Amino acid sequence: MPLVRILCFFLVLFLLAGTAQFYLQYRERYNDNSSFQIINFYKEEKNSADAVFVGSSCTFAFYSPLFAYENYGIKTINYSSSGMGMLAYRYAIEEVRKTQKDAMILLTVTPNYEMQYLGVHFMSDYMPFSKNKIDFLLKYFTQPGESVLNSVGFFVPIVEYHDRWAEMDKDDFIIDEGIKGATRHQYYLGTVNDISEAYYRSDEKMELPEKMEVLMKDLLDYLDENDENIIFIFPPKTYKEDEYKQMSKLYDLITSRGYEVLDLRDSFEDLSLSMKQDFYDINHTNIHGSIKYTDHLAQYVMKQRNCTVTDDPKWNAALEKYHEIISAHVLDVETDMKNRDYDLQFPVLSSIKQENDTVTVNWSETPGADGYIVYRNEGNGFERVFETDTDLLFSDKDIEKGKTYTYTVLSYREDNGRRLYGNYDYKGLTIEVK
Image (cartoon, rainbow, N blue to C red):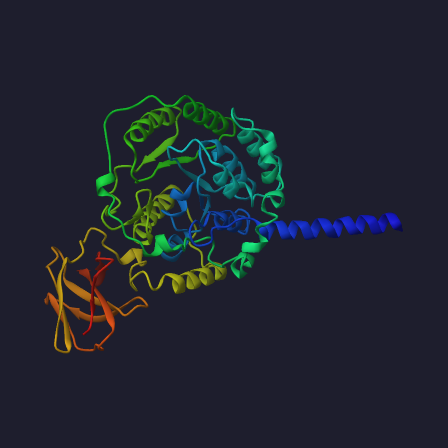
């Protein structure tokens, strides 16, 4: 009996420590989303995905599985985490294959081959304990300049996070947000940056750093050995001069081994991505750019695979919840990919002014547009307030003194009896009523 009691005591202690460790682990809830990408991947039903997108934050910031499901009824999921570098790719792919054996895998490749501690944490902390997890951590901590002793907090995270309880709040106990890992942080939803000055391209190529070449060859050998036919993606982001040239060399290496590369580095126009509006920083799309990118990649997946259109109550619920989150940041028709014309430019807002009890907004004519919809934002998101076929101004008399209003205008065109909605100025023009 004493032995049984001792065993029960240690079993309970082990379970309590495991539970505490799970919640103590570091999660940048609204700035990164990395941990939720990994957590939600393991919540998906086995062999349910048409495709899995693997890679760093350039994966989950660019591609939205919920938008793909909303418009095309396909189930695609992300296995991605911020800072995931080349060293981690093969281990991420092996994790995917444990539960999604037949899914198409699309690997987003960036120049990052030197992973940092935080990036290793984001990927490994929520991986189930397995030989693959051990192999990944040992691969990282047996590199020159590292030490296996530094890995203790990665194998047993409570060692590293045991004192984090003092900074925890109620959000740390929310593990499943019910939105399948969809990106929701403030920069993705509400930031618009012009990246055009940072954009660089070249026809030149540069020899790869030795470590980058070794890691990529190791990955390709692994793919050959496991008969994997994955698709590589070079995302449309900004690259430093050396990085761009090295990626071109990397393209040659990958394709020489018989693997397909979707080189989207210079595909801003083909993807209808605006350098002036569709990014929240030089490396990541905002939600507006993500919608366009997702549309393109979802259609690519459908062409490559015989996807079954699904209507899943769990996905529907996640989508409904996500729309509640993003409603203040996108227009009511913006995620309707099948009724969008991304090439229809946005009306340029030329002026906004107040005269007595009226605010007037003016905009320029958009080539190819058959009409315009004016939206007004009083602080909780844009709502339709006016529609016109020919006018290039809107006079708003439904205003209150002391309130601030923001206006923007969406263009549309008619196509065989249906409307195709174009682009709009995400920031709009703002005025405080005197």
